[in-house]
Image (cartoon, rainbow, N blue to C red; front, side):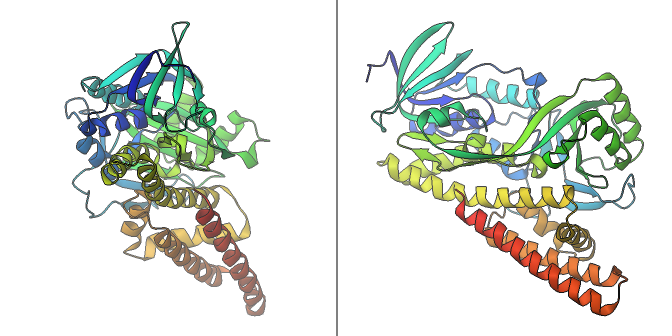
Length: 450
């Protein structure tokens, strides 16, 4: 093992949201922190722009929330779901309700502005050093508890030693692979996004989930009178040209937003993002630890990416507080706590995306049940939003919500199916069996995943 040219207590690979939050979270330990940032053209990047109350509260706790810097952020009250094609009047409003972080309102903001604000705040910390336009080229884990990292910067290589290596370089993390942590990846969809100037959203102050077409359309305000509109193109529909797929979804968008989106599509080149479910087989190895999407990702339908990335910094801080004299024990604790949030997040995002994008008989029953549940059960909004916003990350909570939705779906199917009673009984029995098997599969997969 070569001697290092420089030494830092912590090296963070990636200077985006999760990396900056982690740098801030480690301030109390007196660690010297180096953030290695390859440089991002964030204005041409489609990334998370909605932050749940839990994430906003974490920014305050980390000292990263500057009210003046975030003055253009749009307060978000919850999600507005549009189940009927082109119809705004039939929308379903899901609000955050009251919980322990209700004082921290959710917000949406242009990602490039958000990241720049966080970086400006982090650069004011004395314990943080930035190495810009640099990348991690290699990791020597000969001694797992004393990694040596080869960093390339301005055409020059240097070896940097550290006590803790943090991979914060996204779902396609190269550092995760260099360290030797295995992962699985399942491609879900291609997402294309447009910016709508002077947008007229049917439910201002809410994230819009439009499910009246063959797949999802998502929309939300990002400040300055602008909105982001994103079209989801599931992998199962890849045989359809992207432009044709987007055109087919225009009818699901309520007016006047529909015409505004059509105008943007005619003049803008969309930003493209490949959505995938990434499952890391571990959250740490030796002195290396994963945060944010490097530790696993899911479809952005639930808008949990930025929230979990910021909260990972707090989770790592709390683990080091609990085990100040043992990095191994601290990382074991971090893995346990993080796994709980990741399992629930992935299961919910996967199930909701399937329900909103596929037309299998069982999923159609669940879709109808979901709409019926949200409309008829007064407590459904707060329970659903607690899970989506990760204030309730218990897998059992997600499971019971799933069971309630199935029950509503079967009731709706029984009431609306016009086939003879005996045939309905047989079909219902088959649906119950299929839905039960699906539920068991999803729960089993979630429990096995890291």
